[in-house]
Length: 248
Image (cartoon, rainbow, N blue to C red; front, side):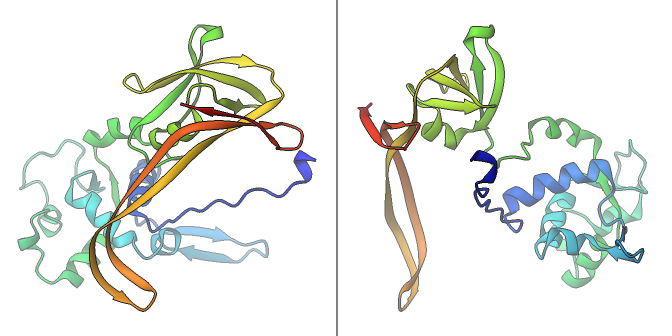
């Protein structure tokens, strides 16, 4: 039944700068940004694909951020340049907005230049999680095997999946969460075999901080969203029925 059930939908907003910028930085290590990519169809036709086609309408803005923060460099510049006289191209893409001149020419200059990851940005790749946008991740460790890390999830998801008493599934194995250690960014688990799974009991409060404008049923402004996990429930693994509620 597992293999015949439909996959759950995945929502991925490529225009989210928190997702796009780290992905671009990783991509610039494999191939310079703005490279022309050749796609060969099943009929043998060749098509040139641009970065804008791959990354979406916010590509220019994201690339400009990487350029102005010196996380990427033009490929024509020597790996070890440090002075402003190294290449005239550096002045055209200076992080000082007063040197931009015409924004359209500035954007055109960036789009028509090949960019690679800067040496000083290499260490950033180690902490970029392509599966999540949380800046902090929680390591899930198996205490029965000496504390080896079996998985990681985003910090914000830990409150909904790694609370003490939760059953965490990993590679078809059930793990009981015995401790969530937030200062250490880790969750301690042990493998178990039980006939239930768990889900978090939570509530979400939305406080309106400032209303900017409103149009009939639509309102625009600033809000504060507070999610609180106050317990969990146990579900029968066979039919999903709730048979126990636990408060924390």
